Length: 199
Image 1 (cartoon, rainbow, N blue to C red):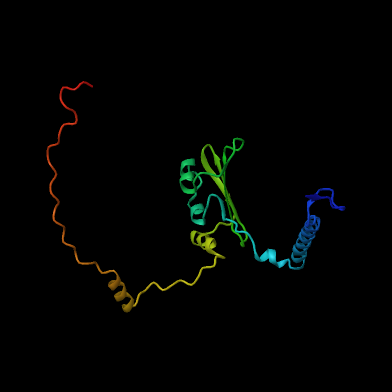
Image 2 (tube, one colour):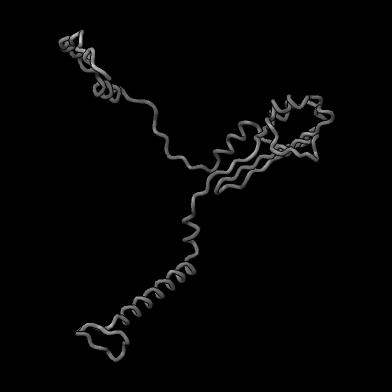
């Protein structure tokens, strides 16, 4: 039998209390937890700087090195320039006599690299080019590995004892004699259909 409690409009089973205090207690606990989170981040701003999401390296455009720029000579055709520098990143219908080679490299924790080389043509022949300070090939490769942390490289030499242990582990077992061949199957088989039966 259900009885109506005076403080609750819905009926409750006999001997049980309404669920309002439990819901109120959960709501208060949630608000306290949320306010604690905001107070922790305001007091310890260094936590967000310690834990940062991983960002991929972004490499865009054409890598043009000092050696490639030195190979350019006025009077070269467009195909020769393309062979040395590759296809330009930017070509414009409004500036058909100009090719722009733009290179950008962004890596988390490093200053972004950005370089530009612009080639100017006159009658499909290279007239001149303008470029930022370009690195040599060796400097460019070194800049890609700068700032990376590598662990200790293990030695790549084995001692005599390690070589002997390796040989012991990888000894080839003695060859197993082949088993006797199985009986040869019959060379003739019965027909699948009996002759003279209609299909």
